[in-house]
Amino acid sequence: MTDELQRKADQINVLRSQAAELQEKMQLMQQALGELSASQKALASYKDLQNGSLFPLGSGVFAKARLEAVEKVLVDVGGRVLVEQSLQDAQKTLEKRKGAIEKSAQDVTNNYAAVIGQLEKISQEAEEIIQRRTPSR
Image (tube, rainbow, N blue to C red; front, side, top):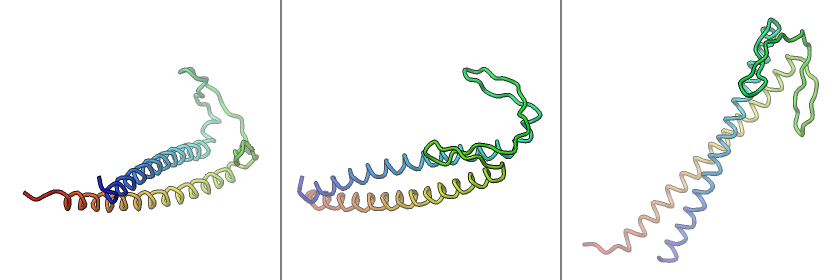
């Protein structure tokens, strides 16, 4: 294999690795967005839980219970630090997080598209090198 072709192969391997990492980040962000949406729905339906609901205890076991009227909830603000917030403020906090994650997800998606574009370009260049080196019949 020529040096030029070897460089192209190395570049392709690096780009494939970058693409895989970016895909993993996108999946993690989608998971985080799903969890945020679930939390937002739970906060929005909090008043319904005061009438009674099933709460998971684990291993398929549930307890039927009612929540007391609660004015505030504890919100994780990072580093396992909890801050007491009103339901409305907690919703705002979750919405801000969601916006930040969506922006980051868009950036990662754009980076992924750029990496895929580079990968396609370098793959085409490698293919052209191979075609030039292959004798015509």
